[in-house]
Length: 314
Image 1 (cartoon, rainbow, N blue to C red):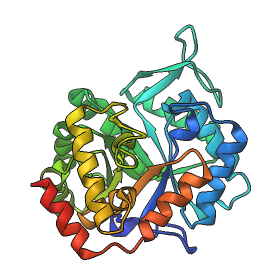
Image 2 (cartoon, rainbow, N blue to C red):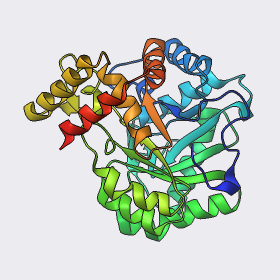
Image 3 (tube, one colour):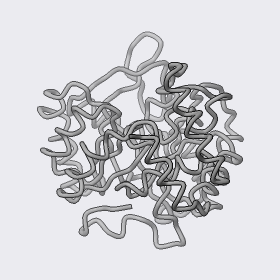
Image 4 (cartoon, rainbow, N blue to C red):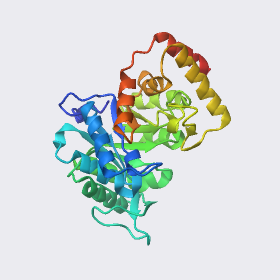
């Protein structure tokens, strides 16, 4: 992963992959409940495959993702992994009151205030059971003016004070993301779903600015919610059933991959790395899913395949 030179080494001094992170939304009950034991096994599978970057958020399961990730990492030396979480939302209980300490919540509400960000980070540290996180993302800040007025000054202070190593924005909409990358001295940015085989818009709109400003790029949602894994069995795009036209495009991409003896998912997970991303962050809820995406990163894909996939994008 690319970070500003003064932040290196942010990745651990072990045999860690620099191209992959585990997205921990699925172990926060995204789409389906996940028992604690299964969540722990999933994180341990990532560790076994030398994945040492873990990305979570209070939003994922209203704190359950952070709690389970902390449970899985208990006993793992803190310097052996890189931990990212997010601020910009605070957890609330069933009555709408903010939760305290390590408690999970019933829901979350947007809060880009300085106090909200500090409370959110304190809760995350308690649920994770650690004294620090390495990367702090501002999570889906669609209110641009509030982000500039209160959220980014708080994040910059946290970085200046050494509370966090790096600050970032995680967002799936390019209009505000482009502005943040151009105007805020970020270390990293995490785009979601805009640098994929189905949506290449970040390629021209985001990557050049990030590169010019020395901002590392993490690519999330590389499967666009599942359609780029299995267009028939998992025809979801942006967490909703995919429109017929998108499913047809995905099926054509799958056919192109099959003609080159390749899997669509393997091409999808490698695509961002070929086009300016420093690492991909892939969500998984089981060890099998972890092994599948890591194997996909390591799959040998022919150059002719990429030419054929590019032709489908025209």
